[in-house]
Image 1 (cartoon, rainbow, N blue to C red):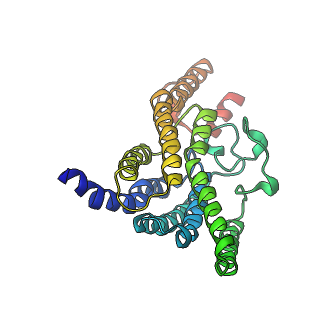
Image 2 (cartoon, rainbow, N blue to C red; image 1 turned 45 degrees about the vertical axis):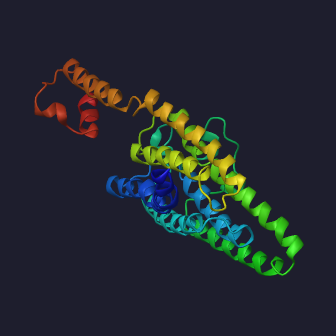
Length: 284
């Protein structure tokens, strides 16, 4: 019991606090290094930013464990950085039909997706993203100041805020699951993120059900749902991997060499010419 108490009282809260960094730092660096956010669902940043803001404003009424509050602040910071990097390196709007179109292609180009009003969270300009987050923060702050002096109403408002925020956070893996399904590939989604999600789920479940501090049942139920989704993501990674991208490249290179030989060209250095020059050969 001494070890369990140590993990519950010290290790688990520290792990929960730093989990936003361990979960998303590698994804952020990967997008920055490759100069592309293709394959990464930008809806993840939307879900985590909204859920974390709601959790911050849920705290005054619920007074849950302070480790969860600190985690929310750190999550907001890391998601703002991830959003900025993803927007700076988003795929070109002309990319269609492949992974480069995720997550910025129009909704009509996607399977099983309802068109979003005003193209929400798929804007081409950077400004609307920051405006939406600013307006959300101002609205939550104004409601906090207006409703908090009324205890009865504030109790209901706070409970609703927590339920909505935790429900939104529980849907975190769903955009990535749908993205992987549409492209039949997990390319662009870092396995380090998936591993940290699953490890974090296990640690949260252990902490939620062994901690002596206040952990509302809403946290526990949403945590169980999210863990099931993350395990399904792991199944997708096992089934899809990086998809057929490597096979396509190889077949394209082979086909290019065959075309050039059929047109009387050698398989020497000129077989490695750019596509534009190859087209010129074919026209000749």
